[in-house]
Length: 498
Image 1: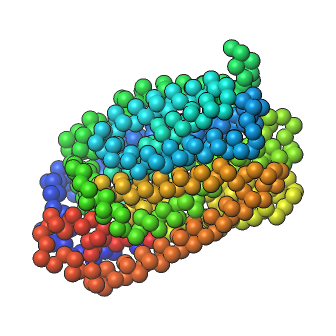
Image 2: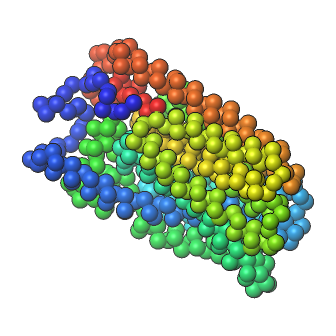
Image 3: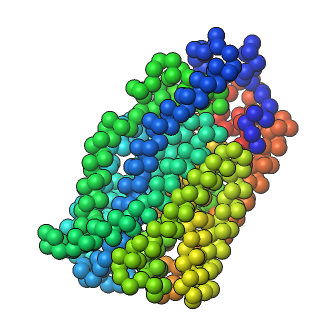
């Protein structure tokens, strides 16, 4: 349901707009509505060009660094390190998700307290160093240590950037930006395959094998971008240096009028954590997100191996290159779904439809032995997974109000989803058909992603109906404007995105 259909239980200004406590004066009050709209359009366009491209590059690097071990495996990592297959290789994947998930719920609080322009570059330097160090591993224990620290350092980027973007854009604008940001993950799959195919040709240089150079060069590239990020990553709206005073006011006003307080400075209180833990949307969001995040990592980590087992690949390089097209298709659909979901406000329906495509793809991988059918199944699998990641995060961010509460909820949702990466790294062990792996992914997508999205949509529609009927108006009786704003998404006129 559209925000403009909300009933207003707030008081109104002389101009007929909903008044929000602490709303700064309009610097464009003397202009016509057409002039205001043009200024707003140019402001959003400027934010897009300043914020989004660099963040996409950073996430491309992050996803590349966490999943390039799949390319390294095809390039004989397991042989050179004398790993016991499949147990020790899968354990090296698992340990990444443990450290990643344990640290993730804390990262948004640290991001808010340390500032994005400091926090993000620091964690990038740390994970770049861990990535480079992976190229100098000589045994199983060294690989496990490198993967543990990589997960620890990378934990802050994905939840941090989604939270960060939700503090800049209106709810109706956030989805497509989150989709563009996440499409970098799909592009990293394409880019990673091409890059791995090229880097692998360095085999033997400096007495290091080709798989080691994949880690070393990609890790050093991350460190270079990390240093640049001290200047290229900007702080929250209240402190961002690239904004003029007038533009800062415009950003704050447009967020507040969208019933967000995200542009304001808040101090951390334990009540924000308690509010998040008591919110049923967080727990159901965790179920939905695990339904797409586990398949995402399983697909990313094992696609090169799956393609290699199709029997088409006459060389390692060809296996890497055949993994490129499914990722490219997924990147395009991710942005398309983000745009459609923003326009229709039907994020649940988008999840339901797209997840059905993914289930069909993995059923093809389960049922067929024809390489052509199975390769087509990898396309449908990618198309069914990637758009749901950014759409689910946007859905949660849209429906949680309050600076720290939203940060905590996103941390828990994304952290729980990534903890299920432990599952993803232990289900592909019986090639060439990998029946167990494909079967577990079908179950996750059908039960948690499809089923959870359907349940969330139904429950949010029921709650919206009650709010439209005035059955939640009792929450604001006898409260001041400040107390009403503090209710966040519990305000009677806050209508959920379904």
